Length: 125
Image (cartoon, rainbow, N blue to C red; front, side, top):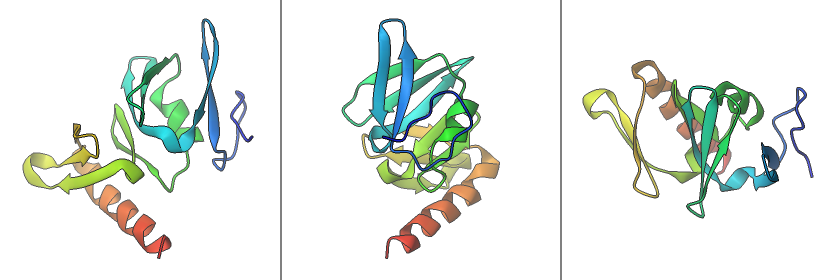
């Protein structure tokens, strides 16, 4: 099992460890739908609808999650493009996730997201 244990790591791991008061949560990276920042905490939204709050910044997760499927679309949001359903260019841009969640995109991130989705799609064919 590849995992991040606090040091600088490559982004090729398939699990991450989230420290909690009661112990550690081991999460499959492919189960993370999106991450939302609030100050120095990050909420991870998982495909089974569970949420995990981590006392790490969004930047920490941006540094350890794989670039090919995780994209920062706003200063407080990272999404897993594997769970992306729709990209809208209306009203500055937003995404719709497969669970129906709508998230605004920062103006400068929209072209990057579109390129990332195209790149990911072409690498799978």
